[in-house]
Picture 1 (cartoon, rainbow, N blue to C red):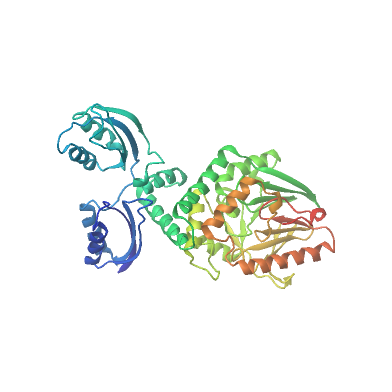
Picture 2: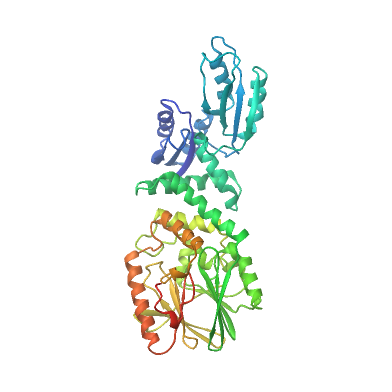
Amino acid sequence: MRERYCLVAKMPNEPGSLHRAAEILKRHDGNIERIQYDQRIDPNTVFFEVVAEGASFQEALAELDDMGYLRRSLPVPAYLKFDIRLPNVPGTLFEFLDCITDTGSNIAYLDYDETIPRGEPLRVGIVLDDGSKANELLDRLKSRYPLEILEHSNVNEDLDNTVFYVRFAQQLRPLIPEDSDEFLMQFLNDSNHIAQELRKRGLDMRQVLNTILNAGYMLHESVRSGCAELQSLDVPGGKLYCIQFPCGGNTYIVDVGSRIMVDTGFGIYREHIRDALHSLNIPLESIDAILITHADADHCGSTGYIDAPTYMSPESLKVLQENDRSYGSAVQGSLLESFYTNMINLFSDFSLSSEIRIIEGGVGSMGGFKIQGNVRIGDVEVIALKSLGGHQAGQLFYYFPRQRLLFTGDSLINMNSLNDEKREYMSLAKVLMTSVNVDPALAREERAMLEKLIREMSEKGDVNVCPGHGDIITDSDRRCDV
């Protein structure tokens, strides 16, 4: 059976090497469906996606491996800088370069001139794909030439174009939970595929790859240095609390006899949730139910860490099962949306509840939105409205009639209340997906419908709007630009 495989090739930067690799794949009946190589980024790394029979593909891999053309692991690279004195005899430079090549090292810079005054050392910068070979190279050189080591460290970022992807992979390693080279190689290939796709749309590949890293670093750094912000509001029968995390969406607690959480934030913020609730004298274990507006990780990624039934739409559950935030939309299967879903789930410790309850069976409509269903938690009534699917298929809006609360998910965002860090994080998602909405035109339409519904509700009394990001929008500040 023919299947799609990916491989990361490590090839010498010399004429014909790419041709030789392609010939091997062709000889084993492999059809190359994607290839990406950019000497400006990394002259030794080539990404292939190949459709082939399993046994034949393994034979091709073995042949490439025998030639040294296959990257099977991602060792920690190293950078060496040293001064070396070479004898002034024919073939000196050739013999020196032999030592470098034999240990799989790459020269970052070399300034050689046989007319330089005798006694002046030659300064050399070396990048080693496998840092464990650094001492082997130094021992070999020191046994033949006078040598003074100036620097021996991890790869110098200004001089490591020869191992760009290896360094990129090592920077990814602490951001993802599965610390295996096989998993990392697949993620590296997927990252490259996204960068290749976005380059067609005018973005620089380095910018895309750095955006991927920045998204992970911002999340992890925010857990170490940040804490959640709290906003509270009196509502009929109790209190409404808004927990705003350093990155991503809001979590709300409606404490009105029953304690209902609306959205949970990223899984990586699970201790932030516990700490925030502790400060309110609300044990996390006292949460009666969780309502999920939509299936993005920053809105439902902690459900698996909270022991409470979780309510969502059937489409949201499918998004989560398919690991594709574009599921059920006109762009279903989008490479950008699928990669972003998997990437952010990995970076954010996503965990899905084992107690999912599907909302369905509703009758009628409200403000032009179909009623998806009615949920009763204790004495609290909640009406779930089905969005048009502009931000994401299956997104629900929740209306609490007695408390006069409307939760809008990401169809409304209180941009004016966001700090610079939150704005920057939101911009990273836009770079990687080009739009945070799976259908931008539909998103504009549902936003206009929501605003009209809110105006109609306000004519009958105060209503407080709870956006996906940013501060609660009270009736008194309705005029703020969301």
